[in-house]
Amino acid sequence: MMIETARIQRKMDGPLLQEIPCIMKVLDESHLDDVMNLQSLIIRRLSREDMIQPFSADFMRSHFSKKGFILGILVENELVAFRNVYYPDITEPEWNLGLDIGFSEAECRRAANLQMVCVHPLYRGNNLASKMNQQAIRLIKEQGRFDHLLATVSPYNYWNVDILLNSGFMIVGLKKKYNGKLRYIVYQNLKAPLLSPPLTDQIAGLTDFQKQETFLKKGFHGFRLSKIPDAHTSMDEIHDPTPVSRIPDQYEIHFSKNPVEGIRKHE
Image (cartoon, rainbow, N blue to C red):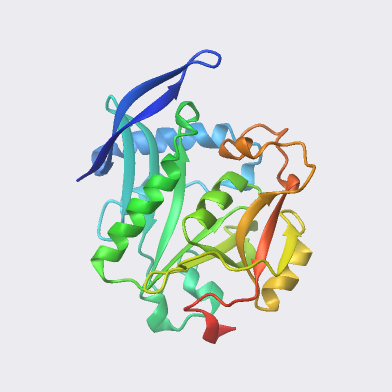
């Protein structure tokens, strides 16, 4: 299913950019090999192995059924980005993130997941992840089956943390998932999305996990990522978290005491 067409920029040698057409569409199983190859490319380039939870081909294949969908962006029939959406069963505690934040069984049945997002390095800087998030959320809402949308993200993957927070999510939990990998749990109420950012009540460094856990236990929620004043890394670099030299502890999370609508009763 075609979603939209656009023109994006591809990185060439040095500072050169080439503008080329692309399409965004809901992928089918014929794209499975392309999805797996792009996942492998991204994982090989990570500065930390725990930043992404790899998906097997069988699990990725399940997203092409009634269990979810995968949005893809193609340039000249080459897959350059994708975003997974998954509909977890109540019997899948690894994936049904409602269980991690205290949802009832009924609420867990109305919770969907944004899962993996991958963008080819040559096409970063085009806001492709944000655009796929926007379209994925629209498609999920149109189904009318879900009230809640959740995702996990590594605190060290600050590129994706920033994108999720700018896509209407808030950090509502911090715990180890996927065999001990540290993850934020982020949440968005599909029926009552945030209309404007809340005021900052507290700030914690992106790698100050003890302070963040204290805030979260007290009912604060993280809603914005920013560069620590006087830090050397430019915010422009947030779009490519690959090089080891771009250090996550140069960023901080803003927290608000205002409860996220939809999880207030669970605090």
